[in-house]
Length: 360
Image 1 (tube, helix red, strand yellow):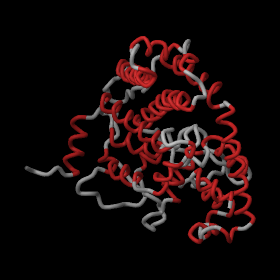
Image 2 (cartoon, helix red, strand yellow):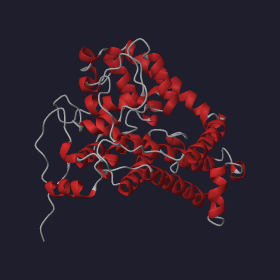
Image 3 (spheres, one colour):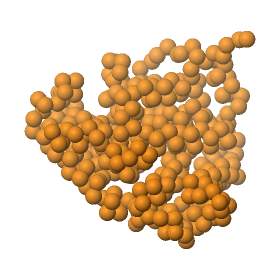
């Protein structure tokens, strides 16, 4: 038997994938490296992300219900794994690059601070005069600067395609990005759009599951949500978990069918990766329900506001006493500035580490 080399995998991509897919043979890194004999460039990105400290910390970072409140609620890590699985499946159906989609999905939440979006708002306010804070931009900063595992100053040295995909949404003026990402030159790969939509599918459906598990709302509250009702009609005896599985299947199927219907392999005609208008509306109904009944519930907001307060206290403490920062963190103050260094340090904390530190 002949073993499969990296070149064989790259040749397979050229034969099997769409012309609109990202191809690992075309990937580039800021710091040139010799290619791996077995793995494509995007597979190496995936492996570097999985082995990073920032990825391991996602296990103890909140999705919606605080990560320390129970072992069975989703964390940022389990959410990222779920998005990755969906994105690989969709990419396979559309003949896009599943390795790149997987890498993007695993990295897409690396910049989240403790306590989710409430923590993000707190840091953005604290950093208002110093370049602001957004978790997507912070994710790019994590892989480009903070996760400097190899000591060459380029972080994980991921491919441009993976790094560019992390910059979705607005980036605050003055936020420190790597020079080749400033202004976000060039379009993100289609695989990045697949991850964005799979991220939405995952949190819409799995946040319903966590809300039910937490007792914030009950199954009867979901009656009237058209996506839930349709899935429930298909899985009458499957229980809530089965209905949520049917919702996921419906949204993923719609994404693939709608995108495929507008697909064109002709050169220069890039397809649009999208849901149908109907599925978009059905998903928005679920989102509005979650906002009203879950994200703004007393159960969630009380914990989140306590977390926001802890972030502010930690930030102010280290800005006032930078000598208390770990030595490796303190060494970045000269190049990154005190406030940005402290922001990076606090943003990287897990929920439980932040709680324990502020209690001390």
